[in-house]
Length: 202
Image 1 (spheres, helix red, strand yellow):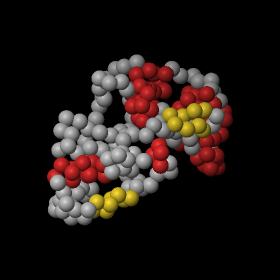
Image 2 (spheres, rainbow, N blue to C red):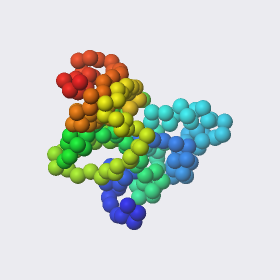
Image 3 (cartoon, rainbow, N blue to C red):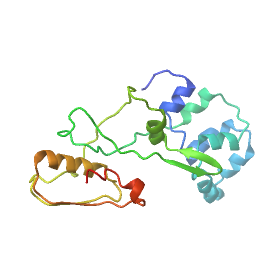
Image 4 (tube, one colour):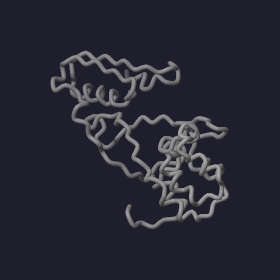
């Protein structure tokens, strides 16, 4: 929140984006670096090199690659952009689960530039969030993505980009309503044994 005070650690953990580099950030942070290579990278004739550098790298790479730095953490943190919200489709029907909200979150883990990387929200939920913890959320509605008004109408659900989550919610809703319409779901993933989410429900 604006005006809120916290430790640098707390700011980097919860409030600021440390996983995305941009030209704007590099230009703002460059005056604090004693390393001439950062200034060279920001030259107008180095656009392609800059694009290659920021791809798959984060704030830790930047700090390690272009030190020494003539700045305190308190000077650098305000240059970062606020951590953007992560949007997940709700995977449950309110009618079927009035006291719960189900989400489908796959932990993002990969290696790039010689270091293991982790998704910001996905691994927070998978590794650090414990039962009883609280998180900040908000609901973003989409009036164009909904079941037909007639519960007996057949539906075809195709989820290559949205994943399976909202369709699981749709199927729960139709079951509670006793919908007679036929339902088809096309959802692709690579491994039958590990990726066939909610298999027994389908």
